[in-house]
Length: 193
Image 1 (tube, rainbow, N blue to C red):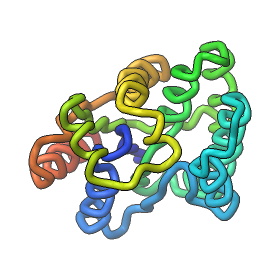
Image 2 (cartoon, rainbow, N blue to C red):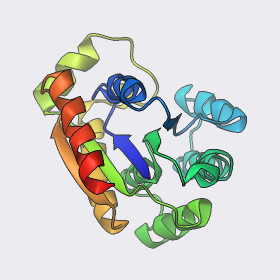
Image 3 (cartoon, rainbow, N blue to C red):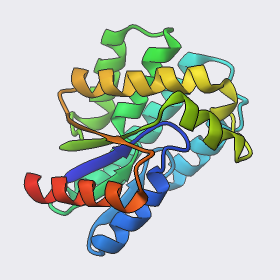
C-alpha cells in the first residue's frame, strides 16, 4: 500500500512521518523531492531560490519524481510505503504557477510516475491564522518566502490535484493535537488495507 502525507510548509508532515515510522517499523519511509541521490541535488537547487523559470522548476521536480518512482516506490509496492509529499504536490505547485496547461501537467506527471499514484492521500490542512503563526516561528526557505497567500493557494490546489488524479483524499485539520492526527491516519490505513 502506497500512501502520502501532504500539506503546505509547516503543516506537520515531518512530525507525522516520524510518528508513522515508529508505528510501522517495517514500512518504507520516503519523501519527495529528495529521496534519491539525484533527488537531493534537485531539492537543493529548487529550495535555493536560484531557479527563475517556473517551467524549469516543474521539469526538475518531474526528473526527481521519475527517479523516485524507479528507485523507491515501484520496487516496494508490495509493502507499506509512506511518502512525505507525492505526485499531488507536483501537480498542485505546477497548477498554481499557471505557466503550464493542466493537460500537460497531468500527462507529464503520469509519464514520470508510470501512473503509480498513492492509494490514499492525507492532507494536513492549515488555516491562514495558523499558517501565519507557524511561519513566524522559523527561518523561511525559498518556497516559504513566496508568502502566505501563495501557500494557501497551494493548499487549495492540493485538494484539486488529488481529485484530478482520482486519489482518495483524507483532509485533516493540522491544528489538532499531534496524537489525534496520527490516530486518524493509522485508523484510515487499517480501514483501507
